[in-house]
Length: 436
Ligand code: PHE
Image (cartoon, rainbow, N blue to C red):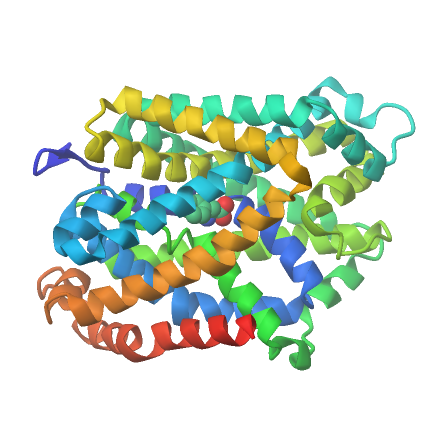
């Protein structure tokens, strides 16, 4: 279906599933648990929750508005609304590149774990998973599986917006929910699970007020909601003028929050039950979970199901930042969609190779990750908010939020107030505070 000659997603539900597909990914299942594990558990959850409502949703709305109004890729979108702001689109493209530099590799880890669960090699003999992970990292396999992941993403994106992205999200997202819920129930019956619930759900408020915790939680909210780097701008360019932006942003955020909490409810009880530490860092789910599966009957099956889920969730997210770059290359550099997708794929491979090789001994994974979540995305989101309410015409946000006066009239006042005075200032304050 097309509106103004451009591809567009189907109905209400499709739009929510596609945007939720972008949002829900490694951010919720891999990053959230280890961030919460390192930053005080429940305290982190609390600040994360607040960040979603105070900064995440308003910023997502601003991005939706920019994308749907202009119906262009991230750079074209800002440029068409105001020439002087096209740099903000480029910052999004840069963000998408930085993410591509490490996200595929981690998604590839889940693919490897899925593969070795299916073949049974992850559970044969006497394996310690810290060693397994270290050996895996020292081999070529991360690169190979990362490359396979890039190719899978390429395949879907090059099929186009409706047949590829929309169709994939509609099948994968509901499946993901079902699997996570089954896992959460299963884990509840493990010995000592209660310790995990305590860590994840009972709050030490002192921890919640640390600038570091707040910064990390806000970064997590941006990362997880895919906000602040042109991704939601690009996706919204395929929305219809009848889609309700407020309902969409609320649903996407709530679904993301639910999956993050579910992931926590699977992982923390499991971690404590196995007598492990929640502060393991990026390898958390890859070291702790196999340990837990191992003690369960049908270890390989549970493990395969879980890593299949991580793979699915990651795939709907990799699709979305691949699309940011593909749309940019095809519309700005006037390439065919296929050539644009190939260019993006080649670039992603090169960046993944850089990260994998740790050229000059640099920890690119960590640098790319912190740079996107704590610098590019917060600043990108802050300026998008400022742009939408201070530099566009007075009625721009109002018209987009209300679909030209049809609904959400009172809500639009609240959101515009937040976008003007609360959201950007808060991001700025935390950003500066954390800097010094
Ligand atoms: N939100 C995705 C996740 O949580 C990551 C992402 C960030 C995707 C930015 C697109 C843009 O995994």
